[in-house]
Image: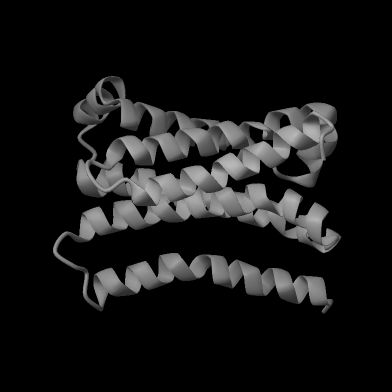
Length: 193
């Protein structure tokens, strides 16, 4: 087995660790005063972390010269979708009890839910087109489509910022990281780097 294959297996398991630790805490450890809120919050936070790490792969590769990093970007992006789906599912089924009328009302009337749901919807085509076959089939359009990941990250940070009522430090940290990544992207596209 090659070192890349071993590294991919290790990364796969490492990316599953937050979900495993959360499940263990909720079912066997100390779930806290509101286990549902904890699940919704932690899966949302991990979604943002994976989105930002995925977006950081290209600039990190450019600055470090570690071209091998690009081989892990797809997995990181799919984990962002995985945690986003866990986040949405926890909200829909654990928080709202699959009460569909309330779900549709929330999506329509609560801006932070509208933005979060839109971000999740935009992740679907990114996840579906992440295979080598789809990359070849879409050609240059694949790269254009996958630039939506920046919009998804913006919507994710906005969703978190609007959700937080008082202490906005955590969403502002994510916003600062995203702003840095967007600036690096803009400088590259504008030829300033």
